[in-house]
Length: 193
Image (tube, rainbow, N blue to C red; front, side, top):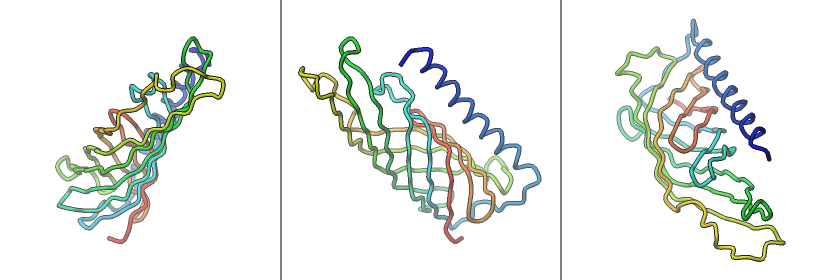
C-alpha cells in the first residue's frame, strides 16, 4: 500500500469521526433527552481507530465492547474486550505477517458533567483502562526466517481516555471516546434506571 493511499485513508477516517462529533453536538440543540441517573448500567459498543506504536504507526480498525456499572457516585467500572487486526511487511516488503491484538481488562470512568453544569442530555468523562493484550502474529507461508523477529504488542494494556456521550433518550446514546491508544465512536445501550 502506498504512503499516499495510507495518508488519504487516515484523513478520510479523521473527517468521518469529526463529522459525526459535529452532528452530535448540533443535534443536541432543543433535544429533551434524559441525562444519566445515579443508578446506571449499560452496554457500550464502539468502532474506531487504534494507533498504538506497535502498529508501526498505522491506523488500524478497532472494535470494542464493555458493560459499565456504577460503583460510586459519578464513578463506574466497565469490563471490556476489544479486537484489532492488521497486515504488515518485514524485510524489504517481501514477507508479510498478520497481527491480531485482543485487549481485555477493566475501564474506570469518572463523570464530571455535574461539575461543569452540562445539560441533561450530555455526559462528559475522564477514564483509564488497564488490562492484558492477547497478541497473535502469523507469518506468510513462504517466510523461512525467524518468526520471533517481531515481538508484537506489550502484554500490558494501559489507556487514558476523555469522552462525551449524548443521550437520545433513557435507553440509547452515542459516545465519542478519545484516548492515548484507541479512539472510538459508538452506541450506548442503557439498562433500567
